[in-house]
Length: 154
Image 1 (cartoon, rainbow, N blue to C red):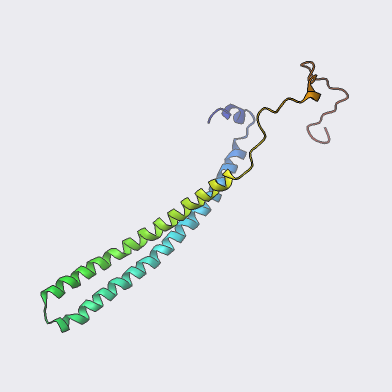
Image 2: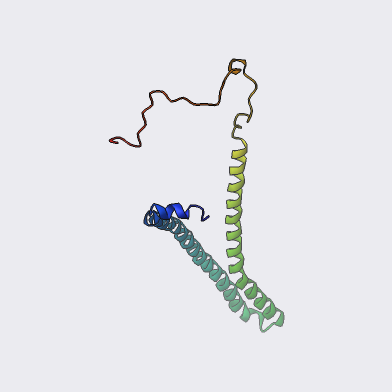
């Protein structure tokens, strides 16, 4: 929010905060770059697998064409197999991405499960302790022989 903006400007802290923001953004972008690079690497490999499947479907159709002697049913089935082979690449990409999304969501569920097992904090109100019945007796604080410093050498 912009609530602290006047304080930041009053202390001339804009350059330091801007540098901190840029450093944090650079750190986040490094992770995003690695994620994008890994996705591109995987997409290329999956495209190659899909290309080999398409190649195999086409090769089988060409090699069997001579044995079928112009059979129209074979031509239709060969076209159908090549058509399905073309959609395999998209299906592979989709399956792998959905699998990785599922894994990411399951990690979130694991974390929530771990957080549920963390012991609770103490109750907000504690049972009455008889030894503290007269404490505090008044609403005041007394400082006696107190020395405070912001930092050494002051």
